Image (cartoon, rainbow, N blue to C red; front, side, top):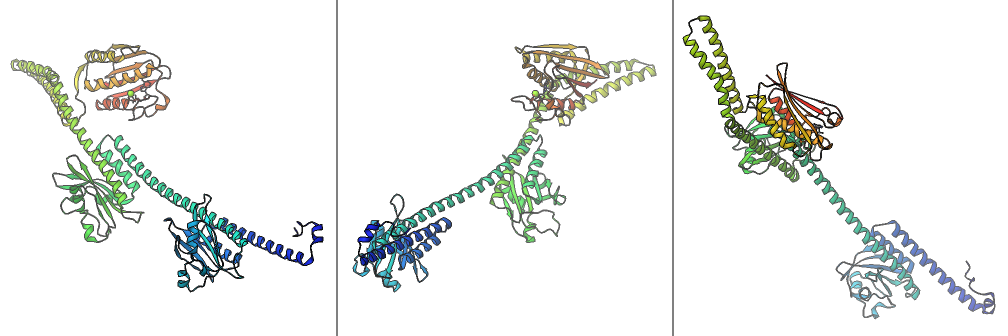
Length: 605
Ligand SMILES: Nc1ncnc2c1ncn2[C@@H]1O[C@H](COP(=O)(O)OP(=O)(O)OP(=O)(O)O)[C@@H](O)[C@H]1O
Ligand SMILES: [Mg+2]
């Protein structure tokens, strides 16, 4: 585009030559200024788009502002968060300086306070000028052009000032140019603040995410330990399960559960995992003067972070002399009545860190859970003992009754024996008496084995007829109002040795399952039979339900195996199997989809 484009040919013709040349000179100057302004602003825009380092960007802006304006130096003041102080970046001979200025101080301070531009030809004639900065820097300020930096809402962000225009003083055109630069700088500051805000929020988020991940891992570990403990039937299983998770999460040379033995006043290594297990299994650690003993007594964690052999000795463990103890940690296992022992981890491997506070906290929770498992297991043992004694009490009259039969027989034969002269007949009587004494002894042995907890069932001779009468009574109540018909049929009318209370529980579990299976069809038939076959009494329990689901194949008698029930725990059949095993009996099942299920339970005669 030519600068003449806007002039009509007629206008050109009527203008005198000098005036025309003057006009062209002015227009050319204006055009150059416009182009410079455009270029400068473009460059600043580019920097803004490519560089996120606010300091670098601002330095570039002031360098370019100085060059574009044909000034000696420029300063950009940024208002601080306190709203009273401004910090500056300024160029002087390529050097970047930082100056602090109060809002209201000097011309720049005035501009910041009033949010209005100032253009001064001679600074020293302006009362707002503060010569202190000149005095400090040895510089001589003459002309000043200073513009406020405002954000989109007119909020003050700082000021930009250019000093000492090379050819005189700053013009109105310069003012417009500086305003444009100030606008760009304001955008830059605002963007950078937004950017920094986003960055800091991202850092916070990342931090939160890391913490969350750590917490999730902790909770998962605790959950696994909890599940292992809850699924365990015995103390040994619970402790082993928990210890496996511990060593899985904290690989170390040895992880051990030391339990307090009152008789010996020592801690005994009850379970040990890891490469160092052979040294520690069954090891005894004195309570006095050792780290594990101190940990149990004080109910506080204790740790060791030293390779000094003197301190390693304080563990009281029978470790090989060549083993260097790098670190160890003991967590108390506590019960309601005091210390039960401690969880010990020796030499963390793979991870060069010793056990930190977080590890100690998590391991401490696991040790507490171990304490709960031990307490629960001991309570269950106590309860079982009490139950056994109660069971003996309840059945004692029956046991005495059972004993009466052989004793009467013995008494009878003893009397016959006294009168009998024939040696052969006497021998026969003796044999019969001996057989009855064996039977009495067997009964007493069973009673004692049950009392000591060696046997879980208290076997007594039970008449099948009486047992089935009890079964009928129980199941009639269970099936009442369900549309299930009960049929009890006894082919065998003799007696069999069983723990009738436990056997009733097994029958009840089978009947409850049958009821649940048939309920969907709105009823059916449950048949109980007893017959003798091959030296066994076979009790069968058949239903007309839908049959056992395929999903239960291979795990029907497993604990916690359940299918198709809302609130099934999967323990019913596991308990039946346990009771049958305790009777050394047999348990079989036959089931066909749509044709019902029959469980058959065999007891030796
Ligand atoms: N008579 C039956 N007919 C059909 N399915 C059966 C029968 N008995 C057991 N089952 C199946 O076997 C599964 C396991 O039974 P079990 O008694 O062990 O546990 P549960 O009944 O699910 O739960 P719980 O008895 O602990 O409340 C049942 O969930 C059911 O799917
Ligand atoms: Mg069940």
